[in-house]
Amino acid sequence: MTGAMTRDALLDLYPRAAVVVASCVVAADGDRDGLPTVLIEAMALGVPVISTDVTGIPELVENGRTGYLTPQDDPTALAATIRRVIDDPVSAKAVARAGRDRVVSTFDLRTNVTALRGLFEQVTPR
Image 1 (tube, rainbow, N blue to C red):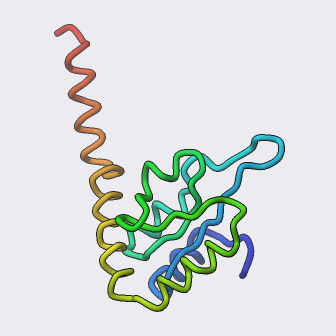
Image 2: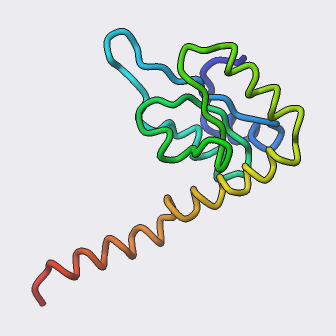
């Protein structure tokens, strides 16, 4: 656990990672992560991810298909899921590929700009 690090340092670590874990929680004051960039980056680079079922995360991470989800504040479930990924790298790799496909289809800049342009053209008089 290294704590906070620069984006460049993090990008250097992804290729060596067996899994990226983002154990997000809703804070007592209601503060929460919407959709952590670290999950999008890891998935885009083909690294399996584990996160929690809070806020917008399940829209990106579909449990067992594009990544793995555990309940927040459940360290036993989190540990079991980490162990599952480590013990079954073949399945984890398949899930990571599906996660990468999800990110590419959902977050690709060219695709999204093209779709947005089409919407603007529909409502903009010529």
